[in-house]
Every structure is written in C-alpha cells, then in structure tokens.
Length: 322
Image 1 (tube, helix red, strand yellow):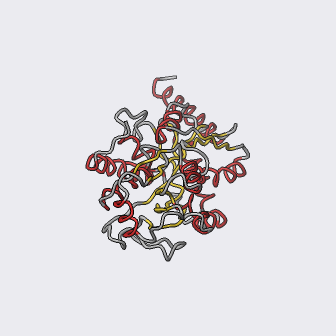
Image 2 (tube, one colour):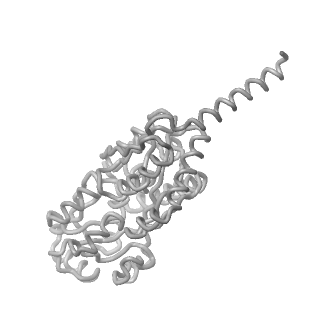
Image 3 (cartoon, helix red, strand yellow):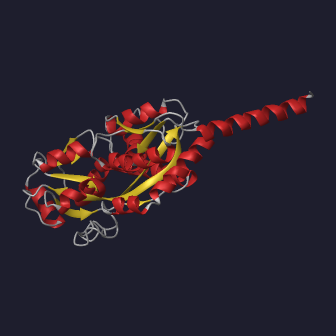
C-alpha cells in the first residue's frame, strides 16, 4: 500500500469510527451540571429539558447542582471534565459573561474552555420586593432607600452573577446604595425574600413569576425595554426614569472544549426538537420566558459578544467579586 492510499485508509477509518461513535451517543447516562442551587432560572431550564432528552435518547439525563463562586465552581468542574458529551453545563450570562469578568482569577475562560451547543431560553429580570416594603413604584423605592442609608438589603444569586451585576447597575443608575446579601443561587435568595429576611432581589422572571402571581412578593419593575407580556401592569425601569435600561438573561447548554462536533450536533438537534414542542414553549411562556434553540455558531457568537460587553460594564462600574 503506497503512502497516499495509507492516508486515505486512515482518514476513512477515523471518519467511520467518529460517525459510529456519535451515532452510539449517548450509550450511558448524561449529566447536566447546574452551577447554582436548585430553584433558580438555570435550574428550571435544566429540569425542563432533561425529561425530554431522557425520553428521546433512552438514557437517563441527570441534573446535578454544583453551586458556588457565582457559577465558577460548577463551570470549572465541567470545563475540566472529559470532552465526550456526558457532562454538560447549563449556563446563563452569570457564568459565561459576568463571573469571568468580576473575579480577578477566573476558574475558566468561557470562550476557550467550552463549546456552545444551543441557547435554551431568553428571560427578563424583574426587581421584586417583600410585601412589607411600602414602595409601590421605583420613585418611592429610591426615596425609601435614600431615607435609610445602609439599612435596605438586596439579595443576589451570588457574588459575580448576572443578578448581582444588574442589581448593581440599577443602584448606580438610580443613585442609591443598598447592602448586598449574596446566596448560592436564586432559589435560596427567593426563600429569604419570601421570609422577609431581605428587602429586595433582582431575579429572572422564570424563578419569581409564581410568587409574584400569588402576591407573596411584589414586582416593581422589569429590566427589558418593553413590558413583559405576563406582567402588563408592571412598568419597565426605563419607563420609571432609568432611561435606556435593558437587560435579559439567555440560558443555554455548553460542553467542554474539544467535544466532537458530531456529539455537539447530536445534542443540539435534540435540544431543538424539545424546545420546539408546544408543551415546552407553553411551560416557559407561563414563566415569562421565550424558548430559543439557536445553532452552536449563533450561541457561541452571542457568548463572545456578551462577554466583551460585560467586560466593559464591569470595568466602568469597577465591580469586583474578590
């Protein structure tokens, strides 16, 4: 066999092996790591698609919470996992854009250490208060905070999360300062807000919607440039004086860098199929979110752009988590 024929044979068997391996994927349980505590937006996204993946693949898809350091701990765990498609990361802007910019020694590089698979959902933030806080609009809230310097508290889903950064930007834009109370995710933060241990929280609408509808917390404003369809009577921050304010969360699935393209494509195809189901669209819609299912290239480009944008915002606001 001459050299040319040998290379052709090598390429053929490599391609055949790759195709066979991707077709066999998954041949064992798949783990989706959520880098926050249960109950928040990222956790809701993971647990919404996991049953569909399990049914589609005939393999159990497990959701594992690894909270801490603004999503850094869970992100690092996945980044260092084998690039075989069996350990995936459900991540939001907190993980791939904010935390790597606010920590002086980030545990991973969101651009180099991960392969984008697909965005899952897009959801606005909402500024929510405990009912005992008397403010009924942003103007009253600002006056209340200014009248109690250092006394009012704002829960965050963790230092260096997008919730934290958006909360900081609200305070900077409004010219107020509150005492921040960090948690290991939106779920624990909401628990203390419901109990009255903290006064306010900036949260993804997916996690807070049920409590807003039941009256257990009060929605003061949404952070998008338009009102949320599920909260038509809740004005935007821009409507209430913070001109130009617009912030959303895009949550999506990532794999360790180096994961074979065939596996990325297989997971992406499954995600697209699941997020296109009306029952899933309705489930997310009821929480104020929109399903995505965009391509790996589109999601990867969004991450690059958002990471660069947050880099400028963090520098301008001089926000540091350590």
